[in-house]
Amino acid sequence: MQISDTMTAALNDQITMELQAAHNYLAMGAWLESAGFSGMSAWMQAQSVEETTHAMKFYQFVLDRGGRVKIGALDAPASEFESVANVFETSLAQERDVSAAINRLYALATDERDFAAVPLLDWFVTEQIEEEATVSQILDDLALADGGPQAMLFLDRELGARGGTE
Ligand SMILES: [Fe+2]
Ligand SMILES: [Fe+2]
Image (cartoon, rainbow, N blue to C red; front, side, top):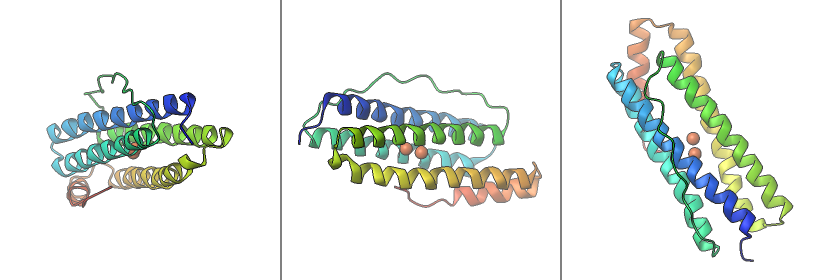
């Protein structure tokens, strides 16, 4: 079954949203490194790469289904943040927006009976649960650390030890 124009447009929007997330995470990483948190910066840089792989999953899917990929313009990311916690709060808000967008794509696929899109979207539903949980945990840890230098150093080292991601 060939992909519909509506579904193609929605998936193209999602490609752009994932690339925007990658763009935003790079800016967050740069701010964190400048603020002295190189481990957290490395975490954000890895997160940016992961968002690019998300964009590429949709990109390949559209092409495999015979659709045309159209990538939208990206906005300049915020480059100033109030605090480390503010960076991760911005990240959580972004992840929640992405989760909502994935839910809308799922609803569209169901409306169109485009069941070929379901396995891909199932993967993203699960991924978003993990993304939100991970960032929420970091925010909880930051609240517990309460800016204390030893705890912040520990968190920076811990996040810097992040391994390869998908
Ligand atoms: Fe993503
Ligand atoms: Fe994400």
